[in-house]
Length: 196
Image 1 (tube, rainbow, N blue to C red):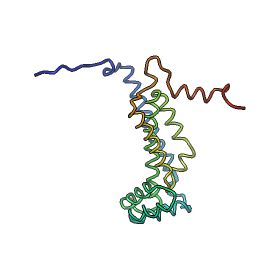
Image 2: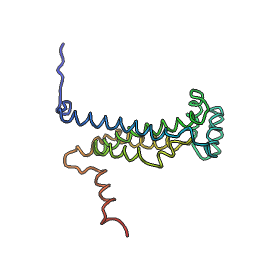
Image 3: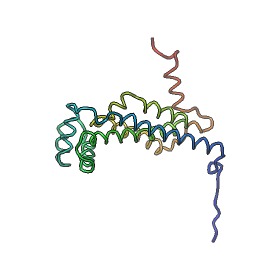
Image 4: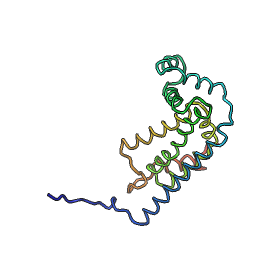
């Protein structure tokens, strides 16, 4: 029995759209490499400050002890559990422990690209990724033994998965609808709307 395959226009890409998509993916790949380079630069040369020392100490506890310790502290235990497991694989050096934050920060770049691409389009995804790659705050926090890079990654991931869950798709591609992100951006950035 032979089944018929149904093709829609969305399944077949034109050569121009394929080339544009390939260019966007190459740009995203270059941004990931640049993000890694900016965050790895001078990573081993930084000294550990107090909060990083507490994170390193906490990660040396057993997994149940980490949960008990963090139940009395401010932060949820996920970062410390990951740091504990990472330390068993990569070691307890400053560089090894900081590398977990660096990895989370670098993974945020392509995820943010995908989020921008899903909301408006490839250009928005690339621009969002560029801004994250060169953000001094993101670079600084990704070089520390703290949970900030992981929190950023999980925040971007939650928004991306929420949009997939509700089936929003690419808002800009919907016919007759204004792109939500672009409309909000124009509204917030318009000089006439800025409070004086």
